[in-house]
Structures are given as C-alpha cells and as structure tokens.
Image 1 (tube, rainbow, N blue to C red):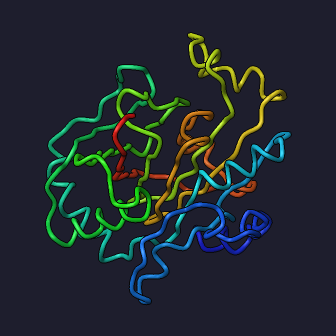
Image 2 (cartoon, rainbow, N blue to C red):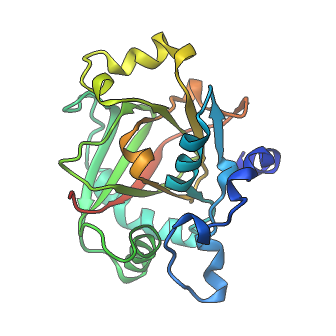
Length: 252
C-alpha cells in the first residue's frame, strides 16, 4: 500500500529546501480547496549511484510527483469514459521501437465536461496552459512492461505529464547520453554497466500526477518496473493493471 511507503520515505525532503516557487515550477493559482492538487512530493524520488550535485538539483526541478492529484470520484469518472473503448481493443505485444509490451492505447481530444476539467487542470499545472490537443490514454496490462526508452522528439516537446489510474507503479530513470541512445543494445546498458550509472526510482501512487520535463525528459531513459521488480526504498510496491492519461506539448 502507498500510505506506509509515503510515511516512511521522508529522507528525500532536501529537494524541498528552496521551495517550489524558487525552482521555476509554474503553478496555476487555484481556489484554496484545490491546493492539495498542486503540491509536489519530492519524497517520492529515491536516488541511487553517485549523482553529481548539480545533476541531482536539476533532476529535482524537472521530475515532479503530485500525490492525490485526483480523488476517487474523479478517477472513477475518467475510467467510466475511457474503459468502454479500451475494452474493445486487444492488448498488444509488439511496439514500433520495442519499448512496451502488453498494452493497448488510444488518443482522445473530446472529453465529458467533468473530465475535461481534469485535463485542463493537468495542462494548467504542467504546461502553463498550453498542450497538444490529443491526450494519450495508455492501458498497461498487469503483466505488461514499459522498457527503458527516451520518448522521440518527433512526437512531443520538452514536457510530459501523466496521471496514474487503478494502480501504483515505480518509474526508473537512468542517466544516458546520445551515444547510448543510438546503441542497438541500449536497453541492456543499465544491467551491464550498473556500477557506472546513477539513477532515480520514482514512486507513482495511484491517482497521482507526474511531470517530467527538460533534463528528466531528454537525459534519462524511463521505464515502468515490472511487477516482480516493483519496489521503492526496498519495499515492494504492488503493481497491477494501470491506465495512464498523458498530456504532452508540441515538439519545438
């Protein structure tokens, strides 16, 4: 369960030392009752390996998690809109760049009013009000995996923001470079050269929002850990079927 984990992981609060306002995160001013929806939780990030101080500082700025971005009613409303269509699709086990197995997906531009308000809230928090009109809906099976990859610059800009439905998950981001990304075996580089790498594990609680931009977007591979590998701070994180609703900005 997420609650004991979040209770136990206060060791990374140093990322909060200068405050969100000083770290350049643009937040929409919302009514007081919605303040909980925009408070980042750097304690959801666990660092591993020998990080250069400036790299860790940049990463804390560019990789954000907002727990409880949705409440249960909002999650149910989103599921009610996307699941009838998703259930007509088969899970796929081939992907154009071999990045993902056990998934089905769609894109949506038009939403029911209550769900449109949620999408607008994501866009306001993560993109300062401007994002691509089509929203990516990705359904990852309970046994599905998202392998290490860097999203192509052809399809989105410097920011990706997503909400997690149905399940907690752990995202791993491993520092990479342009040379490694052109290596045919770059998905295995971490396993072969782990002692030379530094990386971060990021807890994505159910109903949370993550925002990944700039350094985190371009200089790190990201993956969703498989159920048998899913842990955070040496505690297992149960991962089942997960639907993510993902917004992006335009490529530059």
